[in-house]
Image (cartoon, rainbow, N blue to C red):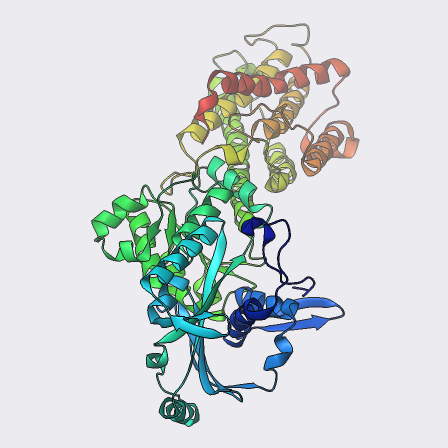
Length: 577
């Protein structure tokens, strides 16, 4: 907002190598336009330690900066005094101020949408005088407005009129009365001073954010009060629509019933010259089609639409308090890219919740099937003669508690901060009716749990004689067999932490991106070895030392859960999400 630079004719658009200096009648015209726009504004231009900023609306701030560059801002200081105002509304699309003028008495100064403002004008400023605003002159203005709008410029018109003595007296009485009075009828027979084009360039990251939203299956709509040509050009520049895509105006929207609007919103992504009630109708039309709708806004009039949307997003910098209270979310930096980042982060958090549940459910399923299968099948596989009760318990109660304490805590919690191991923005949004624990997850849980139980019981069988598997290790006794089975289940659950990070992506993808997970796995391994090898822990958990051959068998059997799930992901990669 620093007022550095100057105001000069556009030589390139005039087709001349050198532009004439801004002087004479042309300078008078520009002065009236810029000073008029500045007078009909509520913004303030401030400077603190050589840093210029605008307090208020940035569009109004543009008038203040341009006027200061022109160097004529000083001529109105002490000349004008505000006595009243006809405020801007989204329905009127213009505002006016009533001013005392030491040179002309009392004047009304207006600014607003050019097409709306011209309806209130009867004359046009030419040089230092004014003349009738003919149909031909109006047509030329319309052409210029369309040209500027097509260049993504936000257009605003400025107009004025010197009030009669009677009107001036009425304006003063209204200013002195409690609550004021409606003076909008004074906005007639105005003199059109000119039309300005203001560029409001999108943030550099906006186009990339729109593209990322589209890639994520999120449809982006632009709803604005700008001229249709301006809205269409900006939307095309941002990649919201292709060039030449249809733009629906508020006036066209008013002529549609709900059915027609519902059909229109399915094919239209840009809306111009809309009022707050139009936003409400657009939200309801989209929701009627089953869409989940998020609406952004900053003004008081946006509050109903934000409340009607599934997710109302208020601007944290420019938004009013009413809008923030009506919103579900407040955007601290007023940046659309932050919304896309929030979508990405939300999907990551949702995925981590599923990882957490997938890991705990499959690990606990493995424990349940191990104990149940060991009790039920020990006789069938010839292991029932190794205990006084005739039933071999593959795990003791203290060992099960240890598994729940160690493997179900640290690794599970570490998954809560797991980065995305798959491209979460490459898939469409999930349906609101989709279950967190769906059929695909349950099938994976049952498969992994069954493999855990099978590998644990197989390890027990390997180290006990009389079972289905007879090896040279089959005479090591029940304590060794149970310790090996216990360690197999613990290690299998650690392998399962890698499985659980995605239903489709290989466990070897992005394998080292979560230092907390590897820290939890490492700590669990150390604790498990201690339980098996440290004498006082052996007594507490009924374990015995294992030699390297035993540990090798344990690792191989525990890793089966990893390889089986890798095969599942390879065969059925489309099951996720």
